[in-house]
Image 1 (cartoon, rainbow, N blue to C red):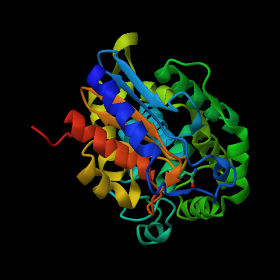
Image 2 (image 1 turned 180 degrees about the vertical axis):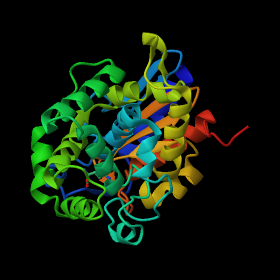
Image 3 (image 1 turned 90 degrees about the horizontal axis):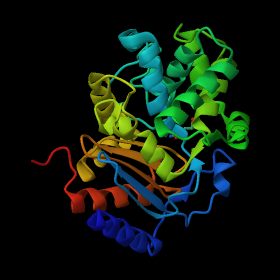
Image 4 (image 1 turned 60 degrees about the vertical axis):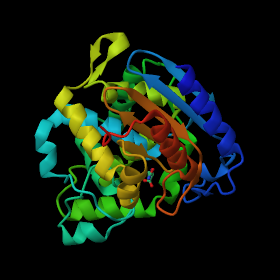
Length: 309
Ligand code: GLN
């Protein structure tokens, strides 16, 4: 553990002096207000060990990282029939791209690009009012993080709704192809709110524990999903979790990861640890610039690639 803590402290010190930090997302105006100098990292080991450094206790907008949790919930709800409505291939396109959706007749490439996550929200809305579906997602996140204090930042949700033209376009397109069962504004209400969940690195790393441990939270003796499902979600995180930057992330870091435009990344070392990092500045693919570099350094130092023997 002391080696891990030393690694995190060194990363935080290096990142404080980084010459470039990327650009904070401003297409959601509320996110543009975040201080680009923030940097936090938290690691929860499967054996219960915890190491954190920097701004690891400060909540940030998890944005697309929430898609990991909605996917787990939707698979629990409808099982493998989900894959009739969403694919499992990397898109090679930006997270908010619409071009493939026409060519592929309204079936999004994967559940982590916006179009795919909107379909997942639509699945979770079935039989519910949007408010209830949002409540269920929040309860799930609180339960896997074992933390009832986690909340949705309503200002971020309404800021995104006010400027969410591309997501409205995607949802309308999905509806036009018959792959949305509810009115676009209702499904998007669910989507915008789960993207606006605010969590600290520590809370997020806690929430990822079940993915690092075959679907079970070791310390709570709680089975969240089956081992097979956890393995598959990890596979999708590796291949699709960073959009058109997924290949680069796998090449450099070598573990499953899911990014969000709030600058967070949840990364999983299967069988070993759950990691969350946060640095608000993004690279040109919309993934945290320093967060990716930090994970590359940490994985190298701890020899955590899933590809190493
Ligand atoms: N809520 C964001 C959006 O739809 C999520 C995108 C992301 O985090 N990459 O644009």
